[in-house]
Image 1 (cartoon, rainbow, N blue to C red):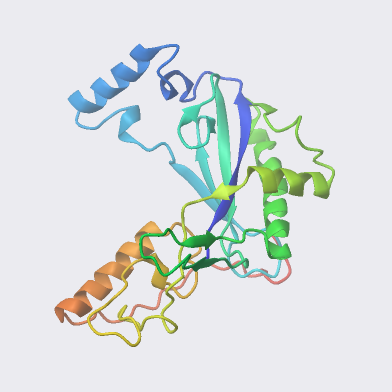
Image 2 (cartoon, rainbow, N blue to C red):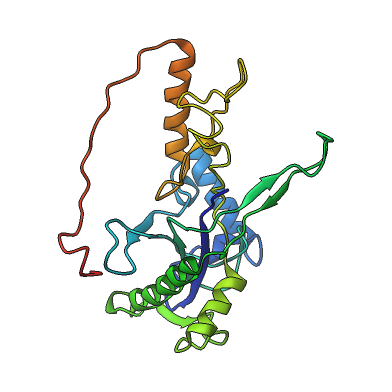
Length: 261
């Protein structure tokens, strides 16, 4: 079992340009109603026409990595959990590792098919994962404290909870605040449980066609790769010819072995 883990880094915003007025029903329910009416009457336009995660990024935390190992999502608001906005103007950066080396398990609880399985993501069982998350925390602080954010950045909401000069303090905060990015996968990996067409080894007429058959996690959100995987296997089920392979090149820092940036 593999999964992406992430944490939120939240900051007060000095300008009233965030989602705070429409994030919750109170204290101004009319803001939400007007945004909903705009979306409904204007053909999906306005604030409700976006999921608000319009800015993101990928970085490497150290030299020696050929491709990014940290992903960012930015939202002009600050939330508790997934949907409850904090009652003031703020913004947050989601920071998470892309290729964690920790491995979890999913096991049967009993022979009763009605019993829920035993799922253990086993987060942070690899020391490398906490180091990557810590480096991501420090680089995020550097980015948000850059000049480009000066007119918007207020105090960090985590400033009272962390001694940013102590790796142990940062690590403890990360362990307490991190949560799943909802990308569990790889429990029925191709080559181990299924073949390349999703057919379960040792069975007839049984396939698995979802993110669980990925041999390893993708370096990013799983939605698009899972759709691609399902489209290709559905073509195989229907007997359609496979499209030819496309070998695409991506940009690699020419000094990736020696430089982080």
